[in-house]
Each structure stands twice: as C-alpha cells, then as structure tokens.
Image (cartoon, rainbow, N blue to C red):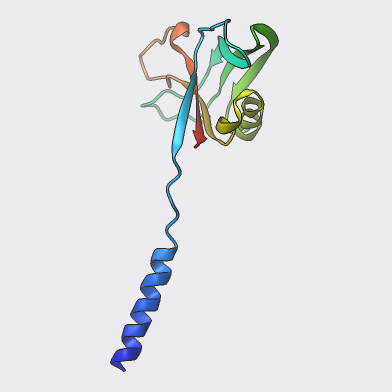
Amino acid sequence: MKKLLLLFLIIFNSLAFAQNTPKESIKYVKITQKKCLKKSGYQIVLKDLVSDSRCPEGLACVWAGEASVIVSVYKDSKLVEDNTIVFSMKNIEENKQWFSKYLPVKQRKIKTVGVFPYPKQGVVVNKKDYYIKIGYIK
C-alpha cells in the first residue's frame, strides 16, 4: 500500500509540474515622433495624436475610450504611407497585423501595442510626449 501511495505521489507531482509553461521573453520597441531619415529599410514614426478619449486612471467610466494617432511609414528615407490608427479594444489584432508588416522579422511576433502615456485624472499631457509601445516575443 505504501509503495502504491508513493507511486501515485510521484506520478501526480510529475504531471503537476509538467503543466508549467516557460515564460515568454517580451522585448519592447518605442515609436516616437522623431525620425532618422538616414536609416535604410522601413521606419515607423508617430506623426500626430489625433484624439485620446481613454478613461483616465483613477476614474470609473462607462466606456473604456480609444486613442487615435497618425503613423508615417518610411522606406529608405521615402514616405510610403500615412495611416490613422485607432487603439481600442475592438481592433487590437488589426493593429498588430498592420505594425508587423513594417517591423523587422525578429520583431513580428507582437504581443501588445499601445499608446502611452496613459491619461491620469487632472494631468495634462503634451502631444509631443506621446509614443507607441510595441511588445514582441523574442
């Protein structure tokens, strides 16, 4: 009986610990309003913040809101496109797909995309301080 109990405990422990998944290593890319036109390949630049109606931290809102930005894409220092991107809960996957077209291959497994800084109650943020932060799996 003791051997059977010991065997059960060994099997249970091996199955319980086998369920742990390895942690993903997430790296981040920050897209700002600065551009370096001497770069080759694709370059993504935050051109302008159109609107930010996200619910500020510290408040309880009925609607989570959204942020809208204009993003410029350059290839070999030439403008490829300007795109207005809306960051909301509805189009997260669509935004990930759009950004992955222009990022290097090693950065295309996008986990998160967002506009920062997040609004806070009573704090006014300058438009020049906004940036896009993309988290990708390394």
